[in-house]
Length: 95
Image (cartoon, rainbow, N blue to C red; front, side):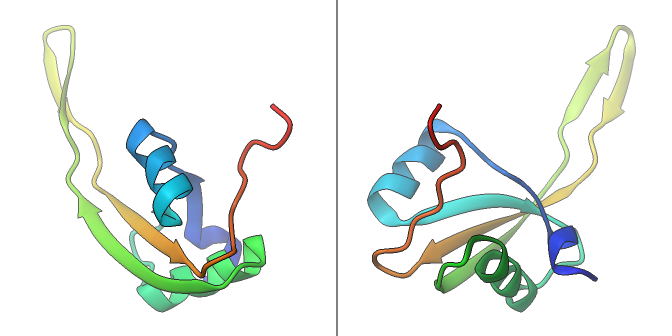
């Protein structure tokens, strides 16, 4: 698997913004087959930072309704990456 296929998107929430500013933790949606070592290499290569630790969480898909039909969203995997002191990732520069 290529390094750019591992990280799908950053997860930007209020809690995520607080963790990024205060605790140097960033959340990403990652590929379902990604491991901690693969996520570490992908973040270090893509953003040119040093990663201290990686936590992986398997997220269950939620039940959704489309009119009278009930469906299931697909499961996904979330990675929380802690950076070394002094390193930051800026997703929206100049906005």
